[in-house]
Length: 287
Image (cartoon, rainbow, N blue to C red; front, side, top):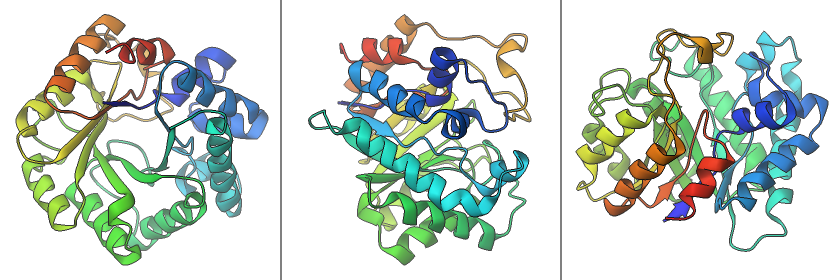
């Protein structure tokens, strides 16, 4: 089993007091890029084998919200990938996954952007990551519509063998947020010669149900859940979601119990997403 890093936004907020509800983990890029480098190293020092580039909010959507010139986007992504490469240079056998995030807010199944806008975002991200990364990972995919655009892009640029796709699941664990059955998703991945399915940015109990549902489907599995036990409706980063009523967190002990179960079911890459800090990753490294 390989260990993926945790939530960069969480670590950057907690270690460096950076809490920006528009730019989130991207904020340090504009004020102190050393913080991004140090955050990567914190995860590496606590057992991560793989780090994900810190460009989740480096999209036209978020730059426009922050009133930042979107013409800066290619340089932002390139420089962020360079920081990740610099972070692993003194470590052995570490990998970098290049994040290709959703164009807009996470968990959005009703895509309000044109296909042209989305594909252009994918290309800018892909083109500025490729020099530095080992694999691409499309993150937080919530609908079959989004997946079909991604698959078309992957096939156009012939990057099937270096690309992973990570999905959000609903509370059944058997469906994406648009209620597409994840076994159907697996069929599409196999047709397109993608041999991994990942789950991310979903509550750990939702992902646990997903893994139980598909672990015999002859596909490699990766998982990096949120610390939180529920997904809020109408989520957006402007919402201080951690203060919501009934918004419960898992403990590091619960996290390890789930991770150990997944390891025994054959999950080969495990890490964390929102709320998962270096303490969780360190415990994970002991499995």
